[in-house]
Length: 369
Figure 1: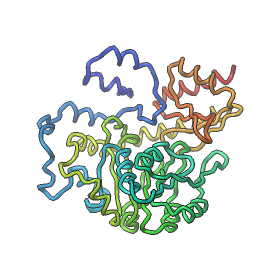
Figure 2: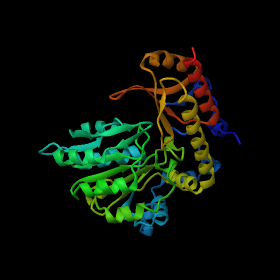
Figure 3: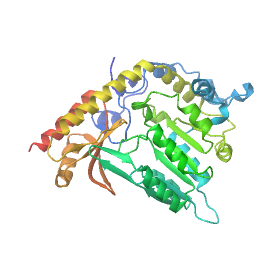
Figure 4: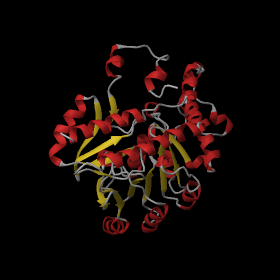
């Protein structure tokens, strides 16, 4: 079976000049999934009942939010009222920040790790929110959340919301369940806790902790996505689990006309293809070890451990500009970071094994000059 997206998708869309020109560029800069989804997804697209496009969902007639929410309810053991869908995980994050960090008589505060996705602050800025950070520190070849440091910042700032990604972007480290429980212990129930788990399934297939966590933590929202692990970023499917104390958000995020009916079918089909995704994840783990072994052997390079589908690599400052041009000339697009604390770092999304080999060889070629 052809592992490339173009190889599988070629029979569904016409060849055009734009696709032909760009198909030899390897994009490894946005944490996308270059293996593509399983065959069942394409079968649904080819054989879709297109009449569904013209009609709203009728799931409400059965007392359900939607077909996908009902599926999640059974799979995760939670009532439908605790489950929500969104236009990608990004949409749910935007909604919850806008809901609780919105314009008011006094400015409201969002607390995030010092190193985190820039988008968190951006959506807080949209509603005049104040963003403060707690420490995250380097420990040899990994990063760690400073829970005690977070406690101190929380006591000083009394934020209205805490937002933590696990695994974290761009550092790749995760928040353990024990650490999460310590975070929960720090805050009172007036503070909303948002856990962004967009990358969680790469290193942790266990879902048994979700039900008791949601049941025991009324102020918790856990957000996941089909964009990363399932390779469906272009379909924009996100979902979340919320505690019973987030009634305001449940109303804010309600979609009484239902959701994208075709996307729901695709999402369910993808979740049933366990073996397909486990095989890809196995390959990604092998390649993370390969990056660590081969790039980590280059003088001045540090490859950080990652629980996600990307790796963070620190490189010598003086080679940054030259390496960027070299990689672009080879049509290998990786992210050269230019952020506070990460001025000479690469964030490399994991592609196929052939693509990853090309990236490693190219970087080694440049470094050996």
